[in-house]
Image (cartoon, rainbow, N blue to C red; front, side, top):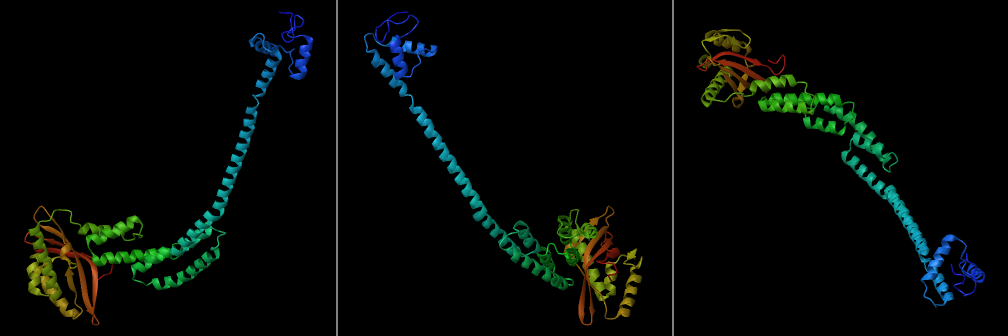
Length: 371
Protein backbone atom coordinates (compact mmCIF):
# COMPACT_ATOMS: atom_id res chain seq x y z
CA UNK A 1 0.00 0.00 0.00
CA UNK A 2 1.22 3.57 -0.78
CA UNK A 3 2.69 5.64 2.06
CA UNK A 4 1.43 8.90 0.54
CA UNK A 5 -1.98 10.35 1.67
CA UNK A 6 -4.22 10.59 -1.42
CA UNK A 7 -5.81 13.78 -0.08
CA UNK A 8 -2.89 15.97 0.96
CA UNK A 9 0.11 14.13 -0.42
CA UNK A 10 1.81 13.93 2.93
CA UNK A 11 3.25 10.86 4.56
CA UNK A 12 0.78 8.44 6.16
CA UNK A 13 1.09 5.18 8.09
CA UNK A 14 1.23 2.09 5.94
CA UNK A 15 -1.93 0.51 7.40
CA UNK A 16 -4.03 3.72 7.11
CA UNK A 17 -5.87 5.03 4.09
CA UNK A 18 -5.25 8.70 4.94
CA UNK A 19 -2.81 10.65 7.08
CA UNK A 20 -3.81 11.48 10.64
CA UNK A 21 -4.75 15.07 9.75
CA UNK A 22 -7.02 14.11 6.86
CA UNK A 23 -8.56 11.27 8.86
CA UNK A 24 -9.48 13.65 11.74
CA UNK A 25 -10.84 16.18 9.27
CA UNK A 26 -13.12 13.57 7.62
CA UNK A 27 -14.30 12.32 10.98
CA UNK A 28 -15.27 15.82 12.12
CA UNK A 29 -16.58 17.25 8.84
CA UNK A 30 -18.35 14.25 7.27
CA UNK A 31 -18.95 12.00 10.26
CA UNK A 32 -17.35 9.07 8.49
CA UNK A 33 -15.70 6.42 10.63
CA UNK A 34 -12.86 5.43 8.42
CA UNK A 35 -11.71 2.79 10.91
CA UNK A 36 -14.69 0.42 10.11
CA UNK A 37 -13.73 -2.18 7.55
CA UNK A 38 -16.80 -2.03 5.33
CA UNK A 39 -16.78 1.75 4.99
CA UNK A 40 -13.03 1.78 4.30
CA UNK A 41 -13.59 -0.50 1.32
CA UNK A 42 -16.45 1.69 0.09
CA UNK A 43 -14.44 4.94 0.37
CA UNK A 44 -11.42 3.30 -1.26
CA UNK A 45 -13.56 2.31 -4.23
CA UNK A 46 -14.96 5.83 -4.53
CA UNK A 47 -11.50 7.43 -4.36
CA UNK A 48 -9.99 5.08 -6.93
CA UNK A 49 -12.75 5.87 -9.41
CA UNK A 50 -11.89 9.58 -9.35
CA UNK A 51 -9.68 10.89 -12.16
CA UNK A 52 -6.06 11.59 -11.32
CA UNK A 53 -5.35 15.20 -10.71
CA UNK A 54 -8.97 16.02 -9.70
CA UNK A 55 -9.52 18.12 -6.65
CA UNK A 56 -9.79 15.54 -3.81
CA UNK A 57 -11.80 17.85 -1.51
CA UNK A 58 -14.39 18.54 -4.25
CA UNK A 59 -14.82 14.83 -4.91
CA UNK A 60 -15.57 14.07 -1.29
CA UNK A 61 -18.00 16.98 -1.05
CA UNK A 62 -19.81 15.74 -4.21
CA UNK A 63 -19.96 12.26 -2.73
CA UNK A 64 -21.44 13.66 0.44
CA UNK A 65 -24.08 15.53 -1.59
CA UNK A 66 -24.98 12.33 -3.48
CA UNK A 67 -25.54 10.49 -0.28
CA UNK A 68 -27.78 13.28 0.98
CA UNK A 69 -29.93 13.00 -2.16
CA UNK A 70 -31.03 9.50 -1.09
CA UNK A 71 -33.11 10.92 1.76
CA UNK A 72 -36.37 11.79 -0.17
CA UNK A 73 -37.70 8.18 -0.15
CA UNK A 74 -38.12 8.50 3.58
CA UNK A 75 -40.35 11.53 2.96
CA UNK A 76 -42.43 9.53 0.45
CA UNK A 77 -42.90 6.78 3.01
CA UNK A 78 -44.17 9.34 5.49
CA UNK A 79 -46.63 10.75 2.93
CA UNK A 80 -47.83 7.22 2.09
CA UNK A 81 -48.48 6.58 5.75
CA UNK A 82 -50.51 9.78 6.05
CA UNK A 83 -52.58 8.85 2.94
CA UNK A 84 -53.33 5.38 4.31
CA UNK A 85 -54.45 6.97 7.59
CA UNK A 86 -56.98 9.21 5.82
CA UNK A 87 -58.23 6.30 3.71
CA UNK A 88 -58.90 4.32 6.89
CA UNK A 89 -60.68 7.32 8.39
CA UNK A 90 -62.85 7.56 5.24
CA UNK A 91 -63.75 3.86 5.39
CA UNK A 92 -64.72 4.18 9.06
CA UNK A 93 -66.92 7.17 8.25
CA UNK A 94 -68.65 5.26 5.41
CA UNK A 95 -69.30 2.25 7.64
CA UNK A 96 -70.71 4.52 10.32
CA UNK A 97 -72.97 6.25 7.80
CA UNK A 98 -74.23 2.87 6.56
CA UNK A 99 -74.99 1.71 10.09
CA UNK A 100 -76.87 4.91 10.81
CA UNK A 101 -78.85 4.52 7.56
CA UNK A 102 -79.62 0.90 8.34
CA UNK A 103 -80.70 1.78 11.87
CA UNK A 104 -82.97 4.64 10.91
CA UNK A 105 -84.09 4.91 7.29
CA UNK A 106 -84.02 1.21 6.34
CA UNK A 107 -85.48 -0.04 9.61
CA UNK A 108 -88.32 2.47 9.49
CA UNK A 109 -89.06 1.52 5.88
CA UNK A 110 -89.22 -2.20 6.71
CA UNK A 111 -91.46 -1.55 9.69
CA UNK A 112 -93.83 0.57 7.61
CA UNK A 113 -94.10 -2.17 5.00
CA UNK A 114 -94.80 -4.76 7.71
CA UNK A 115 -97.55 -2.56 9.14
CA UNK A 116 -99.14 -2.03 5.72
CA UNK A 117 -99.10 -5.81 5.19
CA UNK A 118 -100.84 -6.34 8.55
CA UNK A 119 -103.51 -3.78 7.65
CA UNK A 120 -104.12 -5.37 4.26
CA UNK A 121 -104.49 -8.84 5.79
CA UNK A 122 -106.60 -7.55 8.69
CA UNK A 123 -106.24 -10.95 10.33
CA UNK A 124 -105.12 -12.30 13.68
CA UNK A 125 -101.98 -13.81 12.14
CA UNK A 126 -101.20 -10.57 10.29
CA UNK A 127 -101.23 -8.43 13.44
CA UNK A 128 -99.32 -11.10 15.39
CA UNK A 129 -96.61 -11.14 12.74
CA UNK A 130 -96.16 -7.37 13.09
CA UNK A 131 -96.11 -7.51 16.89
CA UNK A 132 -93.54 -10.32 16.97
CA UNK A 133 -91.22 -8.76 14.38
CA UNK A 134 -91.47 -5.16 15.68
CA UNK A 135 -92.03 -5.30 19.47
CA UNK A 136 -90.89 -1.66 19.74
CA UNK A 137 -92.64 -0.50 16.56
CA UNK A 138 -94.55 2.76 16.39
CA UNK A 139 -97.73 0.84 15.41
CA UNK A 140 -97.48 -1.71 18.25
CA UNK A 141 -100.51 -0.31 20.11
CA UNK A 142 -102.53 -0.14 16.89
CA UNK A 143 -101.69 -3.77 16.13
CA UNK A 144 -102.84 -4.85 19.60
CA UNK A 145 -106.06 -2.90 19.23
CA UNK A 146 -106.72 -4.47 15.83
CA UNK A 147 -106.03 -7.91 17.25
CA UNK A 148 -108.47 -7.48 20.14
CA UNK A 149 -111.15 -6.12 17.80
CA UNK A 150 -110.85 -9.16 15.57
CA UNK A 151 -111.11 -11.55 18.53
CA UNK A 152 -114.34 -9.84 19.60
CA UNK A 153 -115.78 -9.95 16.09
CA UNK A 154 -114.69 -13.55 15.71
CA UNK A 155 -117.15 -14.97 18.28
CA UNK A 156 -120.04 -12.87 16.96
CA UNK A 157 -119.34 -13.92 13.37
CA UNK A 158 -119.11 -17.61 14.21
CA UNK A 159 -122.53 -17.55 15.89
CA UNK A 160 -123.98 -16.40 12.57
CA UNK A 161 -122.00 -18.89 10.49
CA UNK A 162 -122.92 -21.98 12.52
CA UNK A 163 -126.08 -22.40 10.46
CA UNK A 164 -124.82 -20.72 7.29
CA UNK A 165 -125.20 -22.46 3.95
CA UNK A 166 -122.82 -20.00 2.29
CA UNK A 167 -119.53 -21.77 1.56
CA UNK A 168 -117.77 -18.53 0.59
CA UNK A 169 -118.55 -16.93 3.95
CA UNK A 170 -117.01 -19.86 5.81
CA UNK A 171 -113.92 -19.84 3.60
CA UNK A 172 -113.46 -16.11 4.21
CA UNK A 173 -113.79 -16.68 7.97
CA UNK A 174 -111.08 -19.37 7.92
CA UNK A 175 -108.72 -17.02 6.06
CA UNK A 176 -109.40 -14.00 8.27
CA UNK A 177 -109.28 -15.84 11.60
CA UNK A 178 -106.56 -18.40 10.94
CA UNK A 179 -105.76 -18.93 14.63
CA UNK A 180 -109.35 -18.99 15.83
CA UNK A 181 -110.41 -21.78 18.19
CA UNK A 182 -113.46 -22.13 15.94
CA UNK A 183 -111.35 -23.19 12.93
CA UNK A 184 -111.87 -26.97 13.48
CA UNK A 185 -115.64 -26.39 13.55
CA UNK A 186 -115.43 -24.12 10.52
CA UNK A 187 -113.48 -26.74 8.57
CA UNK A 188 -116.06 -29.39 9.45
CA UNK A 189 -118.80 -27.06 8.24
CA UNK A 190 -116.91 -26.31 5.02
CA UNK A 191 -116.38 -30.02 4.40
CA UNK A 192 -120.05 -30.79 5.02
CA UNK A 193 -121.23 -28.06 2.65
CA UNK A 194 -118.70 -29.16 0.01
CA UNK A 195 -120.08 -32.69 0.21
CA UNK A 196 -123.68 -31.49 -0.04
CA UNK A 197 -122.70 -29.45 -3.10
CA UNK A 198 -121.12 -32.52 -4.71
CA UNK A 199 -124.29 -34.54 -4.02
CA UNK A 200 -126.52 -31.86 -5.53
CA UNK A 201 -124.58 -31.90 -8.78
CA UNK A 202 -124.16 -35.68 -8.48
CA UNK A 203 -121.86 -36.38 -11.42
CA UNK A 204 -118.33 -37.60 -11.94
CA UNK A 205 -116.96 -34.05 -12.10
CA UNK A 206 -118.42 -32.97 -8.75
CA UNK A 207 -116.99 -36.00 -6.96
CA UNK A 208 -113.66 -35.54 -8.67
CA UNK A 209 -113.51 -31.94 -7.40
CA UNK A 210 -114.33 -33.05 -3.86
CA UNK A 211 -111.57 -35.66 -3.98
CA UNK A 212 -109.00 -33.16 -5.27
CA UNK A 213 -109.89 -30.59 -2.59
CA UNK A 214 -109.59 -33.29 0.07
CA UNK A 215 -106.20 -34.42 -1.17
CA UNK A 216 -104.89 -30.84 -1.35
CA UNK A 217 -105.96 -30.15 2.26
CA UNK A 218 -108.46 -27.45 1.32
CA UNK A 219 -111.20 -29.46 3.07
CA UNK A 220 -111.09 -32.20 5.70
CA UNK A 221 -112.29 -34.94 3.36
CA UNK A 222 -114.60 -36.64 5.88
CA UNK A 223 -116.62 -38.09 2.96
CA UNK A 224 -113.69 -39.13 0.81
CA UNK A 225 -114.58 -42.84 0.91
CA UNK A 226 -118.13 -42.26 -0.30
CA UNK A 227 -116.92 -39.76 -2.89
CA UNK A 228 -114.48 -42.35 -4.27
CA UNK A 229 -117.25 -44.95 -4.57
CA UNK A 230 -119.58 -42.58 -6.37
CA UNK A 231 -116.83 -41.35 -8.67
CA UNK A 232 -116.14 -44.95 -9.67
CA UNK A 233 -119.87 -45.59 -10.23
CA UNK A 234 -120.26 -42.68 -12.66
CA UNK A 235 -116.88 -42.80 -14.39
CA UNK A 236 -117.19 -44.21 -17.92
CA UNK A 237 -114.14 -46.48 -18.10
CA UNK A 238 -115.04 -48.30 -21.33
CA UNK A 239 -115.63 -46.88 -24.83
CA UNK A 240 -119.19 -45.75 -25.51
CA UNK A 241 -121.23 -47.33 -28.29
CA UNK A 242 -123.60 -44.62 -29.45
CA UNK A 243 -126.39 -47.04 -30.44
CA UNK A 244 -126.25 -48.84 -27.10
CA UNK A 245 -126.15 -45.56 -25.18
CA UNK A 246 -129.17 -44.18 -27.03
CA UNK A 247 -131.20 -47.34 -26.28
CA UNK A 248 -130.17 -47.31 -22.60
CA UNK A 249 -131.15 -43.67 -22.22
CA UNK A 250 -134.51 -44.27 -23.90
CA UNK A 251 -135.36 -47.09 -21.48
CA UNK A 252 -134.19 -45.15 -18.40
CA UNK A 253 -136.11 -42.02 -19.37
CA UNK A 254 -139.30 -43.94 -20.26
CA UNK A 255 -139.26 -46.00 -17.09
CA UNK A 256 -138.81 -43.04 -14.72
CA UNK A 257 -141.45 -41.00 -16.54
CA UNK A 258 -143.91 -43.89 -16.11
CA UNK A 259 -142.90 -44.43 -12.48
CA UNK A 260 -143.47 -40.73 -11.71
CA UNK A 261 -146.96 -40.89 -13.24
CA UNK A 262 -147.71 -44.40 -11.90
CA UNK A 263 -148.40 -45.39 -15.50
CA UNK A 264 -149.09 -49.14 -15.46
CA UNK A 265 -148.69 -49.77 -19.17
CA UNK A 266 -145.59 -47.63 -19.41
CA UNK A 267 -143.76 -49.44 -16.62
CA UNK A 268 -144.85 -52.78 -18.05
CA UNK A 269 -143.19 -51.84 -21.34
CA UNK A 270 -139.76 -51.17 -19.83
CA UNK A 271 -139.60 -54.03 -17.32
CA UNK A 272 -138.35 -57.52 -18.21
CA UNK A 273 -140.83 -60.39 -17.79
CA UNK A 274 -138.96 -61.50 -14.68
CA UNK A 275 -137.41 -58.87 -12.41
CA UNK A 276 -135.18 -60.43 -9.79
CA UNK A 277 -134.78 -57.19 -7.79
CA UNK A 278 -137.04 -54.16 -7.66
CA UNK A 279 -135.66 -51.67 -5.11
CA UNK A 280 -136.14 -53.29 -1.68
CA UNK A 281 -139.08 -55.57 -2.54
CA UNK A 282 -137.15 -58.50 -3.98
CA UNK A 283 -137.93 -60.25 -7.26
CA UNK A 284 -141.26 -60.75 -8.99
CA UNK A 285 -142.96 -60.66 -12.38
CA UNK A 286 -143.57 -57.34 -14.05
CA UNK A 287 -147.34 -57.84 -13.72
CA UNK A 288 -147.06 -58.17 -9.95
CA UNK A 289 -144.64 -55.25 -9.64
CA UNK A 290 -146.79 -52.82 -11.62
CA UNK A 291 -149.92 -53.96 -9.76
CA UNK A 292 -148.33 -53.35 -6.37
CA UNK A 293 -147.19 -49.90 -7.48
CA UNK A 294 -150.75 -48.95 -8.40
CA UNK A 295 -151.96 -49.99 -4.94
CA UNK A 296 -149.17 -48.07 -3.21
CA UNK A 297 -149.92 -44.92 -5.23
CA UNK A 298 -153.57 -45.01 -4.16
CA UNK A 299 -152.51 -45.30 -0.49
CA UNK A 300 -150.07 -42.37 -0.36
CA UNK A 301 -152.36 -39.96 -2.21
CA UNK A 302 -150.79 -36.62 -3.17
CA UNK A 303 -147.46 -37.28 -1.48
CA UNK A 304 -146.17 -38.92 -4.57
CA UNK A 305 -142.54 -38.98 -5.72
CA UNK A 306 -141.39 -37.93 -9.13
CA UNK A 307 -138.02 -38.97 -10.61
CA UNK A 308 -135.64 -37.07 -12.85
CA UNK A 309 -132.69 -39.06 -14.20
CA UNK A 310 -129.55 -37.26 -15.40
CA UNK A 311 -129.27 -38.89 -18.81
CA UNK A 312 -126.05 -37.06 -19.69
CA UNK A 313 -124.28 -38.77 -16.79
CA UNK A 314 -125.34 -42.33 -17.58
CA UNK A 315 -122.48 -44.81 -17.14
CA UNK A 316 -122.66 -48.38 -18.42
CA UNK A 317 -120.67 -51.57 -18.93
CA UNK A 318 -121.65 -54.23 -21.47
CA UNK A 319 -121.18 -57.79 -20.23
CA UNK A 320 -120.04 -60.76 -22.29
CA UNK A 321 -123.62 -62.17 -22.52
CA UNK A 322 -124.88 -58.90 -24.07
CA UNK A 323 -126.52 -57.61 -20.86
CA UNK A 324 -125.81 -54.16 -19.42
CA UNK A 325 -124.94 -52.81 -15.97
CA UNK A 326 -125.90 -49.16 -15.68
CA UNK A 327 -125.48 -46.36 -13.14
CA UNK A 328 -127.45 -43.14 -13.47
CA UNK A 329 -127.85 -40.11 -11.15
CA UNK A 330 -131.44 -39.39 -10.11
CA UNK A 331 -133.20 -36.51 -8.34
CA UNK A 332 -136.34 -37.32 -6.38
CA UNK A 333 -138.99 -34.69 -5.74
CA UNK A 334 -142.25 -34.51 -3.80
CA UNK A 335 -144.79 -31.86 -2.83
CA UNK A 336 -145.38 -30.87 0.77
CA UNK A 337 -147.67 -28.04 1.90
CA UNK A 338 -147.65 -26.61 -1.58
CA UNK A 339 -143.84 -26.65 -1.80
CA UNK A 340 -141.78 -28.91 -4.00
CA UNK A 341 -138.92 -30.59 -2.14
CA UNK A 342 -135.98 -31.82 -4.20
CA UNK A 343 -133.80 -34.69 -3.00
CA UNK A 344 -130.64 -34.98 -5.10
CA UNK A 345 -127.78 -37.42 -4.71
CA UNK A 346 -129.44 -40.73 -5.65
CA UNK A 347 -127.67 -43.13 -8.00
CA UNK A 348 -129.81 -45.84 -9.58
CA UNK A 349 -128.16 -49.19 -10.33
CA UNK A 350 -129.94 -50.88 -13.23
CA UNK A 351 -129.39 -54.11 -15.07
CA UNK A 352 -130.86 -54.57 -18.55
CA UNK A 353 -130.99 -57.59 -20.81
CA UNK A 354 -129.89 -57.47 -24.43
CA UNK A 355 -133.38 -56.19 -25.36
CA UNK A 356 -132.84 -53.15 -23.08
CA UNK A 357 -135.50 -54.32 -20.58
CA UNK A 358 -134.94 -53.70 -16.86
CA UNK A 359 -134.38 -56.91 -14.94
CA UNK A 360 -133.02 -55.31 -11.74
CA UNK A 361 -133.11 -51.87 -10.17
CA UNK A 362 -132.09 -50.46 -6.79
CA UNK A 363 -130.40 -47.25 -5.62
CA UNK A 364 -127.67 -45.69 -3.49
CA UNK A 365 -129.09 -43.00 -1.24
CA UNK A 366 -127.37 -39.68 -0.48
CA UNK A 367 -127.66 -40.19 3.28
CA UNK A 368 -128.78 -43.05 5.52
CA UNK A 369 -132.48 -42.73 6.13
CA UNK A 370 -133.18 -40.88 2.89
CA UNK A 371 -136.65 -41.82 1.43
